[in-house]
Amino acid sequence: MFSLSKFKNILSKNKYGKYLAIGGFAFFFIKGLIWLAVIFSVGFSAFNFI
Image (cartoon, rainbow, N blue to C red; front, side, top):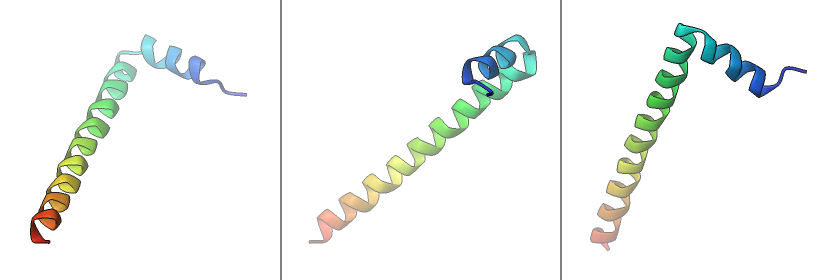
């Protein structure tokens, strides 16, 4: 069975693996912040509409 720790170990030793891990984290972090802003803006506009 392929374990997650073995996969992280392979990624951490490779230069491009580090870029992939950091880039993936940054992508999903920014995506989450955008969705959070969208949800807050829709929520506050609906709250002010009522």
